[in-house]
Image (cartoon, rainbow, N blue to C red; front, side, top):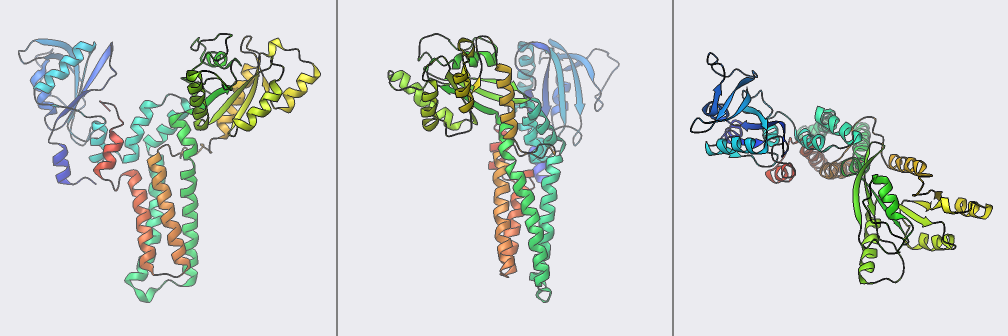
Length: 466
């Protein structure tokens, strides 16, 4: 909860920022927050209708924004939001001007000259957290929902923003505190020492709690993919058609394609949406022995990218006579991770029984980057591979933040220690300490407990105006 002194400190400055993206558009928006927001607006607002006076909460006013010399800068709409009833929890103004990049900057500059301070990255949302309007996980969700670029990432961010995720964390913390209270009762009232049957029940409750926390922490494997994207490396020997597949997936000629082996010396990386997931697809340099210094550097980079990818798409040129022998060698050297093997140039190959058997035995998906044959099957295979790597997302309770996962794992470790101490009938003071630490870790997720360093790390990732 925000104290009176904290609120006074928050309200000391009046901050301003353009809250719409840079560039030209129909409308641009400027936000003011702080104790002088309304007075700064009144200094520079001139109503169109002279009989209108004053600003009523949430009533849009139409007029001109003027500079210090009363020169009209632009026609605007402005709305006033009183303290405790705005997004930030402070007195707040939002101004809507025409969307020219110059005019909106002029309005901001005039407000800065009149006494406002430029908002820092994420400062509006930080104020919303500090004023108690939202908890910390919801504040982080603001950035998630703005940055969401696929249906899956939007769905999870929405669940975080509306509070289902926070409520679940708080439910876990409440259960933990209830168990802690029973343990502490034996400290305050030694005559009420926990008997073996009660101990068994407490351990069972902690087991169930630990299971729920572990399931939530484990959801980060899928949550990371939702928030950061699924990373696919297209790899293989030179001239197998990697760049052609890359262009085909992007539906544009992004990579240079030539019949000369070793054309790709460095990697190319682009984002696409596939099955509702954000996919980072990377075209890597061909892997072979030999080559010049630059090509070898590209091959080293390719191996590093492959080691960091969620999936490797290994391409084979089916027109090469020894492709099956080479593939067996490549499987041992390069494909020790989750991978799909595809055989390119199927349109140029005679599909006799021997070739069909080789393709089947090596679990190769045949396709043609030239004709598009087999590409739809390949995309379906990719979507299935991504879906298989995801946890059950039906509940919407998914961890997308590395900070949250670390806090959950720390809480889990403390609970496991408390269980051991309970089972061994160790001092209840030591058990209570572990449980208090676990509760504190959960409280740091929603911001019941926080420090300025944590807030700085979180809100520094926001853009100006959030």
